Image 1 (tube, rainbow, N blue to C red):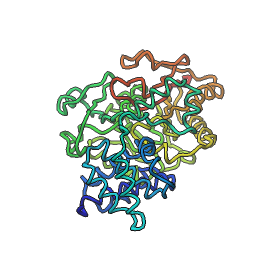
Image 2 (image 1 turned 30 degrees about the vertical axis):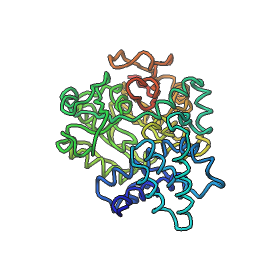
Image 3 (image 1 turned 60 degrees about the vertical axis):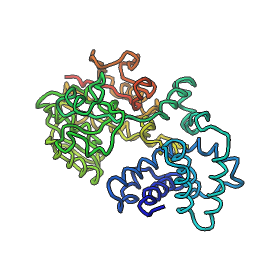
Length: 417
């Protein structure tokens, strides 16, 4: 096993352990773990870590009978990584086993080799094992909200290969043709397989950016117009800012993460779009003007993005979301103070939990009874997305036949003129 072949695996295993042992997210440890790797190796390391975590529960089922005592997370993740490579990624079994043995501590190398060889000899078929399920802290409230059948279908979608969705700057049909992708009913372009994203046609020219189809919908619900003054609140990583700017709006983009806003600035330059970038805490920041419209993509549990970020299920533990929901309510109230009379606020979260979504709408209307909820009759809105309250609830299983979609909730409120 060459050193070059080991390094992406080493980085992947280290990232997995940061998630399972320390509760970190892959996005938080990615840059440090892959800093010394070439771009193609970075992409491979990220993919290996993401997918091995997606299938960790199935790997653990195979490993269980051959583990007298569960090893420390760093070793357990080497075993999971090897089984993912062997059973899903198509790597030769000997290469996956040799890599795991080479990366294991000397004191555990023999055990790793023996366990993986024993798993190879088992008659259990990987593909007959159950689909991974959500951890109890998440599954219980989801079942309460949507029912067992819906949650089982969501879990099935989360285990499916994840396509890549793009938002075109100005010509979705042309981008779909250029990249041989599918033009979705909502206007996003979906690719079933890709290589390195930055090497795809149109990337360097700024003709598109990566954005899940569901994440592109809040801007569509806002219906930005040329010269409309819009605040994109909690804006990073910036896909919505670029959508607003592409529509001709005058955009103020605010987020407290300097690093993520620097990345947004780079993307604006690449796409030749413009926005005012403000790095500040929305809880203390005060604008110098009122806005015609505000888009609030509130901080949330991100449980709707598990199909693209399976590490969330491993990094998060059972916890109360009280502080998070209080923050969401505070952001709604602050945003309404900055809105012109007659202006519109769109609130959205990439959450499957009602307390971050449906409950926030109900509470906002109690605190601000003068507000009017609007759900325009837009062609891209599918009937199953509409709620009785006039909001949009999107679940991953709603597009199961298309490869899934992130879970999102969104609504539009109008301030009295």
